[in-house]
Length: 120
Image 1 (cartoon, helix red, strand yellow):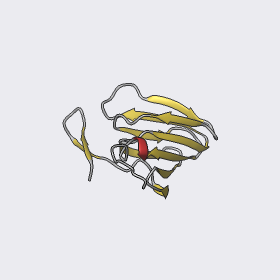
Image 2 (cartoon, rainbow, N blue to C red):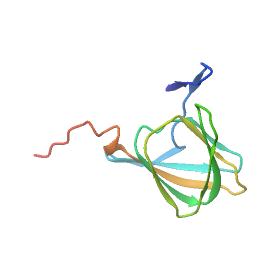
Image 3 (tube, rainbow, N blue to C red):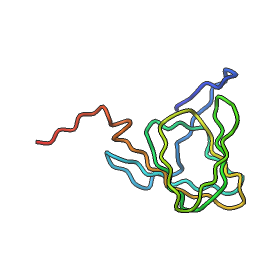
Image 4 (cartoon, one colour):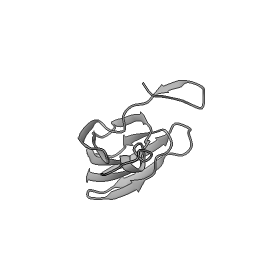
């Protein structure tokens, strides 16, 4: 179990960055994320750089565990964003339509970056 410490000192259990791994090899891991209106992807932290490819559009809210103003983002169907690993956060679908995306973790730039690959 991975945890983080909230600003008030409480321990928060972190969830996976997505709901289901739909593909994985030594270079990438691809997650399915599907959120009905009002649903959220619980507190989580990305340890690898990643791409988010929106399959179904939605208006989302990103809250950081450390607090501050939430980021309100519209993710259009077919839209792609690149993000670096970072803070612990939660994603909430604040819109009226289901949000669906594929999140592609770039393991070769993150968790597998320090491994040496040799080819004889």
